[in-house]
Length: 463
Image (cartoon, rainbow, N blue to C red; front, top):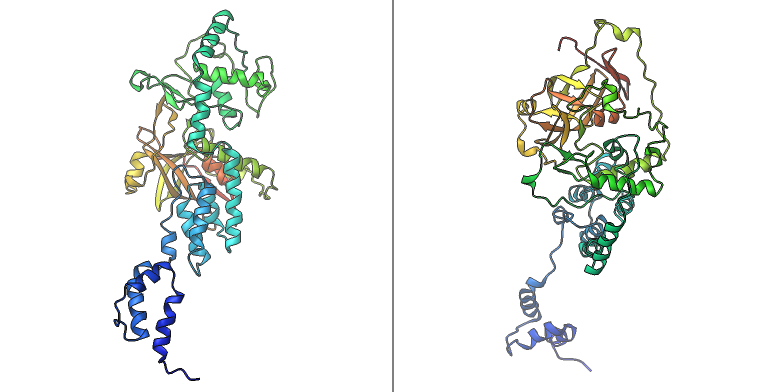
């Protein structure tokens, strides 16, 4: 039996059986005798459903992703990976570049920049390490609603409980605080990365009513000093009772970290009163961050690194030959020159007592760098003239030390300050520790390891 039907007619009749419900509804709206061939039917079908065609994604769409303000790294990586899988033939370099721009974790960014992963598996494994680190440092990151509920439970007791507590406070005399063997300022500097330390809530008093010349590192706000901070005193007392700060109790004379104990200022000065003590520049964004989370992240990285085998360091020493050209005797500071952002900058003070790298506003302006490149910084600096100043911002600039083949170049975070100072810049512990520098003020020299041996920068007594 032979079918006497043209192929186009067969295909047109079979076509509706292959369609979904929506496409069948469209097919039923076609007017009779409006289709001349199967090719004509295919063209009309394509034209009608062209807007429903899925657009093929490219690497450019991946570059638009950004980690949200309150989005955890785990949640973002889930979103990033889902987007990545929709891009066919995505090169690993493009994925790494997109991720570097998208994430907020500076440590993860640095890792991706220094040693880019070569495969997607390596990229995801490395991401998992930083996700675990974030969740270890912030175990309660389960959403703002949970935090608000917990906060309300702790700080908003019902009236009956509050009345009972007030009655207890009236009946029981206050317990005297434990005598400490050092200042509260020193204690906070040493325990600020302890996970048991509970940071206080934001101060409620109006800012205009506070003394702006006093700053409390514990509250991260102005109004009083750390030595007069009752909240810090209570928190230290609570940690002592838990047996965590026994080395700070007054009758314990054991030295910690090679530091001398703070003695009574009046005893040291023979009874002569002083207006205050300025030891070093403190504060700023040392220890990886302008926030508690950043500092905790730095502490976590240090804890992980301390358990790893350390790289072999070259021995560095100073001898008689290093005194060549130095006028003795002297009490000069180590003042050097260096290349900063392709500018030769003179009168740079090397100060291992400073907790920050400082750049004067005047030197910053002379480099011709736009002020828009400054990142805002909240943590103030103490030690300039005894007061507290807030930097204009922080900027990362390449800094080169040494000469010839024995040079080191580091991207250095400088805090730009608008204050009268005798130096164009100050290099503090953040940089000195980073390049493993050894400073000798007697020899007026600084030495540091390089891939070609020990580099040296010598001071200028005429500066």
